[in-house]
Image (cartoon, rainbow, N blue to C red; front, side, top):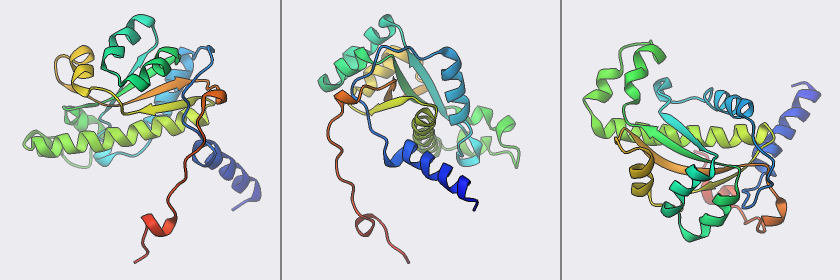
Amino acid sequence: MHKNTLTTSVDALNIALVQARSFNTFTDQPVSDELLSRLQAAAQQGPTSMNCQPARFLFLRSNEAKARLIPALAPGNVEKTKNAPITVIVASDTCFFEHLPTQFKAYDAKPIFEANADLAAATAFRNSSLQGAYLIIAARLLGLDVGPMSGFDVAKVNSEFFPDGRYQANFLINLGYGDPAGNHPQGPRLPFEAVAQLL
């Protein structure tokens, strides 16, 4: 590998993961529509099984939209969400398979999921989680900071934002330009020997 490519790759890895932090506070610098479009387009390129792409992203920017979300949040997530420029609801489309005929052309996979609700639900949840992670990494590489959250009442979020039941909330991401002053000390990470095996 060329030295410059290696250096760039190491820098990108540091930005995306190694030196990245989960932010609790953000500046008031706005995030443009153009940047959100670039963010979504980049995250959409990440792999999903059968190219199923079940994630749906709801970007909450206005005070009115945030006010609808606040009652569903755990107390510790309220202020950080109020102050973030954007909060993303990462959801999964339970009927993602309707798009398979145009997105996955190797064979007709739509009937597999239509006939198996448990498989469809598991596939939607697993792959929307992946896509949410892609969004986090893409955001960092585009110069944004993130604060992922799982402290919320899923039923309340679904009732408020997805009342027809087709979309199901997965997790939340506060998004913007972070203020490091609000960060907690970074927690330790488990070593290779604790989490991995070579067989």
